[in-house]
Length: 143
Image 1 (cartoon, rainbow, N blue to C red):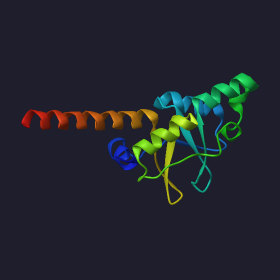
Image 2 (image 1 turned 90 degrees about the horizontal axis):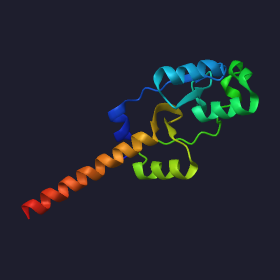
Image 3 (image 1 turned 60 degrees about the vertical axis):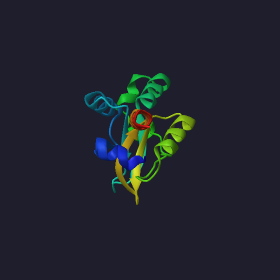
Image 4 (image 1 turned 180 degrees about the vertical axis):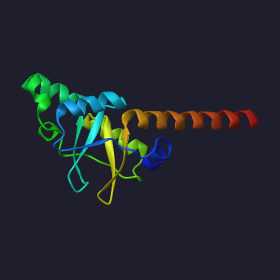
């Protein structure tokens, strides 16, 4: 199973903001859509970074409440680790676990094609294990 399997199920829609979007607007968008991170785009549509709820909390803790009026570019993670549609679920799960983040943009030929979360990866992995168990039960029952 690979990233493409996840995107075929959940779709490729990604909530994005520009580098100049105020952090307050980012928090409102996170809340409105019930998501944990937002991809930040450059003016040309390329990925500039990613910002998570955790980034916002850290900024508030270190800079105080006035930070909400600052552009998101000041708190986003710029070195985005991404994947492509052919990467395996196991590979993505390993990267997310090792690097300790929960959202990974899917980028193909420099173009943002989706985003997957650790929840998406775990859900897909559980489905695969359940399918294997069902196949094994069927094999045993007919053998």
